[in-house]
Length: 204
Image (cartoon, rainbow, N blue to C red):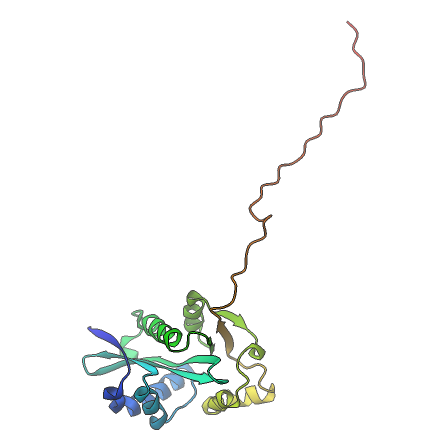
């Protein structure tokens, strides 16, 4: 195996339909939603340099792309997928790292967010510094939520007025201050031991 993860350029646009097929097959196998995208949409992301593609020679191995919302204040890492023959080898984590780094490079002031039902994706995001949040802390851009229409769980999202679904919301904010531990957290409190003085007088 000689997998290379590339930042996408127009030389990779011929993989657009194959990527769409892989995303669809992955969603079907998982039984939960990955939002559907057209080959034209994927090609647009590839041509704009807003995607990463993993190849083993000419074989498509994996893919992920970037979406922007709310005037580029929010960025989503979307469509992370790995070919079934290459799973359980740590490739998803490497692709996630690559698309995350590309997002920070292209949009250094944006908040990066993700919604997912996958435990593995949640773990990867957490390792990168994402924090679980409610949907109200994510973008309110209608275009993002329209992207969920291709998900099989979209009716659940609608019934809950776009406030919750089966997905978990995760957010990375580079400007957020780290939570500092209380100054008392490491302080060792010694117990106070009182010694009683006896009132009895001893005679020799």
